[in-house]
Length: 450
Ligand code: NAD
Image (tube, rainbow, N blue to C red; front, side, top):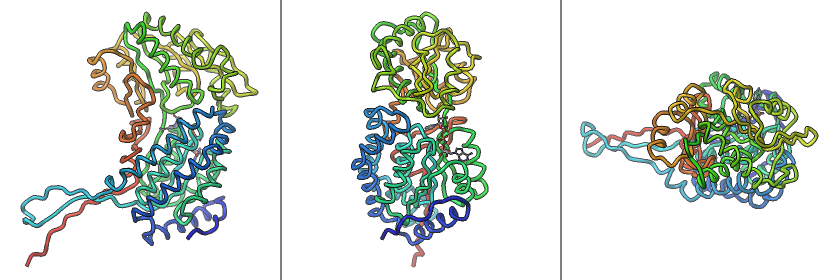
């Protein structure tokens, strides 16, 4: 059934030939049966488990990603998502009936069913280069599509590994990997896809959406932004210590290069003082006195991002961290206090291991601060108060909302994962991946009578 891997895509002609080939497979109906989808997902799972160590090695080569992190947030995460989909896919895909008005007669029926879209393009970023490629690919396959997967050129080891492995495990008539950067992606974007699923920054998101408009291709844009973490007035003692631990764990995982990492903390001046100390202690608990020597701490992806981040370290007052080493692309887990809203570190998404604390006088000002800015991908709050949680939920808008445990909402596959406004459009994971990669077709069935 599988043919040898096709020639690499270097320009629009090869991209067009590739999409034509995959579309021809789609038109045969081969990708529609549940058996084919199940087989592809099982194979993807086998790829992840049989090459667990190879993938962890590649992630380490690309990002200095600690092994435990590579397992947790990329490999095992993807396996869990696939397992959940394999378990529930049949039920999610089942056609649904709706009530029909009596005007159509007593025997009329109506409902919806999910149709696969056709050929889907998945463009992934470098920060979780395995998970953010393979989980959308799994969703597109579960929905019965053919797929072109474009890994990030900024994670070259992972990109090369995926390009080598995917054709060995999946149906190469229906799934292809295209490696490369801007020229290759531009060639792909000139083609007519039936859906484009892009994860990355908003500038390229706009490029993708413009290209998609040419063909009226629907897009999912999984973007980023500054995700705030509000720490409630007067939180103290064990609750504050635990807040600092959870903030530090989320912020400094993958050296801060996580789209849903808490970008900055909002709290009142008195709580800020106590939180500064607690954060410094939490960083030491996680990475020891010298994080550069810790196996649990990653590195910055490249010199460009290293230089960009190094320029952000002068904002506010240094609480902990601040050390850098360009040769190893190391930036220490850094906490900055008393940061003013107009300082450089507050002007753009940080996407690195720098945590500014911005002071507000309480919940009202925090909500106003959040609503004055772009809608974030995630919003976090640490509070004992149900009333405060309800106000935050009701009075702000964000892709996701996490009380008490940053980033963990991604691990609940029944929750849609996606942004709103500047943080993106569309959402996936679990049943939401089926929805995003399918067309929900309406059906009305009126008997001819007689
Ligand atoms: P990146 O530079 O790897 O870019 C993402 C993809 O876009 C790559 O495959 C790349 O080849 C392609 N690309 C780059 N320039 C292009 C161009 N001009 N035309 C066409 N394609 C192009 O990743 P990045 O954008 O640096 O990733 C970081 C951003 O992604 C952050 O803003 C982060 O918050 C966001 N992000 C969001 C999520 C999410 O799930 N919402 C996840 C991870 C990262």
